[in-house]
Image (cartoon, rainbow, N blue to C red; front, side, top):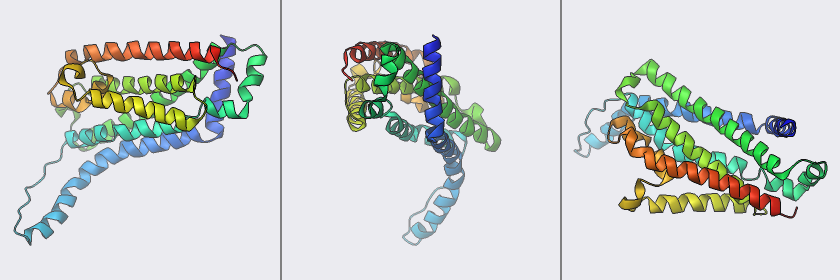
Length: 256
């Protein structure tokens, strides 16, 4: 495991030296602030809009803003967070294929599965830091301005979306094990996401699909219960394990 620790440290150094970690943290921090900021600005936006609509004889009802308004924005922005993260990490393997840097490491005795493990650990740690930073900022501002108790199952809903992010990481790793460039990895990951999203439109399949984990707003409003997510969580965990396993198998067979 010393080799895994050493290679993971090397990956972390590259992540910080290139500024990628700080950029991601900054973006997710901004997302975290945007949610309550948008909620606070909503009444002012409607007030400005009502003035022009009154001239047309249209009345705009007064808008009541609560913590739920901010949480609605939080889950609307979730897809953007996924996109940003995938774009930032779609080249974590392929950039090394093109530079030939992995060959030197592997010829020195580092097992291929340890390379996959180290890079996966780095992505998971980065996702964990950035995701919960965004959540923490939104939660903190919501608690300051309003009352988070209006929302139900906040932590479980956030944890479900977090798990979906881990699934995306496993898909990135799987795609990277047999594809040559970052654009192909990006397209593959986006394609899988699109397929899952489209399948979710079929009522009989929706309760099994990982995309259900991103519907945290239903939990917060009480429209869904925690027990409704059991099957989708199970399927997601199975897909994560399968993706990482196939990635190791493919990477072991890959010619560098």
